[in-house]
Length: 248
Image 1 (tube, rainbow, N blue to C red):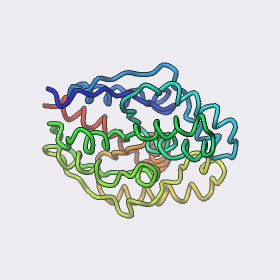
Image 2: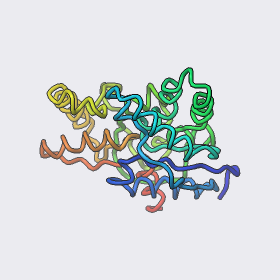
Image 3: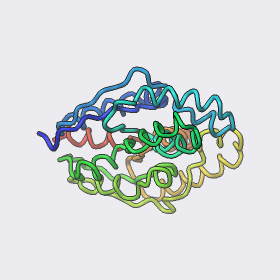
Image 4: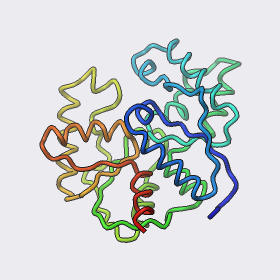
């Protein structure tokens, strides 16, 4: 099964690498299923977002330079978390503004970066991967995925195309879950209230599975759901699409 001969580099992110490797495997399997070549640049590391958000610009630049070198020859870069992907796409350009050597490299990198579902819908032109799954799901699109990557309805389009799947919109879907990287560390009381409100809206949907585009957000929401004694299963969108294919 093939669509077009393209090659992508997987930007797994620290969260995927250390906590949710199955999401990375699912993404690779789906891309290859549609004839997309996938590589994994070994030089990739943290994107530098924690340092950037905390005001440590020189440290953030060191991480950014390493990432730019690692993905310099990539045709497309596919990220599994909107916050990390938006760091590459948006904030590297800001970080190196005025730097005659690194600014052009940051701009070049920025033009290659896509969120997983965004790449499928906007580049490959695919919303229906042929998956089939009898389940009720709702969707949380991370703030950075929406605002930093410009992803609006691509994940929902792919979920609605899954045969047998019941999609229930999440009330106040655009509200932040309270994680925000360092925000949850710096402002734990506010973060706790935000994620509590988010979990209440998820419970309202009656969903059996919470689907997300950012694994850090899913980790935060999942922790609160377990704390509340209501552990709803969570899956990255790549994982649920792959499960739907495995069930056929």
